Length: 303
Image (cartoon, rainbow, N blue to C red):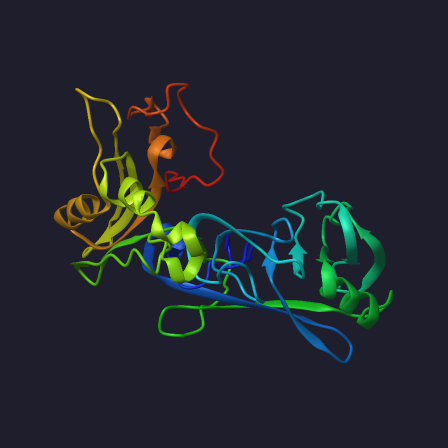
């Protein structure tokens, strides 16, 4: 969610951070989202927002995804029958067989296409259907209808999250510190690949070891008891300079820095910190230098 607008469905139950009050409110929690399409006389769940239908990276989806609906970091789950909403931020939608409904700014249906792939209206949206859900769209939606797509977000206690313009949520994980204590739940955040969730892949524990236990570059966000924002970059994979840290060590560092809440922000070659005057101030670990990243946290001087 960015500025109150939902741009992607939650990886159900995975850790995330809500940023409010102009960046002065930081709250680490677990999040779930529910998106529903309301047609004239029927409703249907929407599986995703702004992603390729049938491809559920990190899993944690709904509607019978295979091999699991549990969060699984770096695992691609699949689903042959899905509805996916696209907002103008996506621009050109994925092409392929299925049905695509195009909506204007007032949620009126301006087109029902018998194949997928178009440009999202600048002030509207589209909904793509594949498999059985494509047939549902073709049967239940007509040009001229009013169709609403609404998303509700809840926190770890099941409490609704207010979708105000002052709310941004980034979901990543795992969580590091909750309520002033080191708190890591690697299974809930999809870092432990259990056999019950992903079949034979779950018997290979090298992923958990390499990602969680080994020293790696890490990025973290947190807040201390005084409400001060903590943005931390820890270099790694560079013998003689920095070996990196485990997830447990990262959590302990954030706790010692005074964080009462903290969340891991990926890591590896994605760990980059820069300032306006000095540019990049850490040492990114990729041999090719900085990566192209899609989700930075930007702190601007107060105007």
